[in-house]
Image: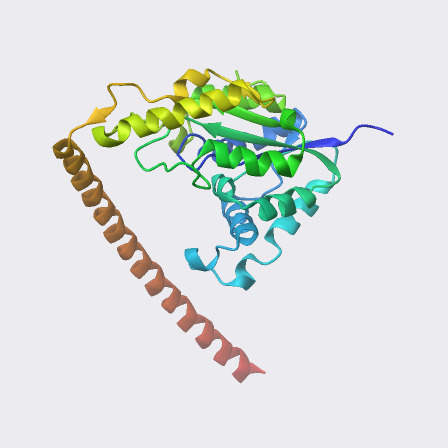
Length: 288
């Protein structure tokens, strides 16, 4: 009997270290197909809805159950065709509970399933044991789901380009000609990990625990685990932190305003289209 096809599920962490991956896979889907690697999801939106379905968090994001129902099965069924290696990517899946991760992997029972975790040092908002953010918790959940620690790949990197290169190494494709410079999320500057001085010791201890975990496990680690420990000069004063928060809030409010205008514009256009549709319907009814 021939060996099973491989399926790689990239789950982030939900910390910005790998949120560009799906966009890069979409950007190079034709070139990757020639290399025997395929992204079964037709869009980031479809994969996003599949993640919401598996995590049962659709209501939190404003979706109805009908809008996400069957999304994961549809993607998997599409991937069953052909002989390619499959790659799925959605950072929200890092927060899956054990039974949710097991269900997702079970749907890929015809494949040799691997999980890819991209991670960098914990930031100011990381709490020990928190699903989706604490590497230890994520590895415990997904390691149990795939059952073999060698099929859990941990990519440690602080920047998109080395992360993309390492992903190619894990999955089995070269990235020298597959640039990610045209992917906005990949070229966006990653801010350094800064944290209030009062939390720095906690985060350094957490990062050290991650390093120890990887050193004493059979997980496949790509990159330098030492990067998981925040540097001693990562602390900032409350005044600087307040200033950063103020700027971030101002940017967020500007984005909300922009989206509000965009939504209003789309609603106006939709209203015009609906009026034209009704008018055309009346004319057709009169002709009939």
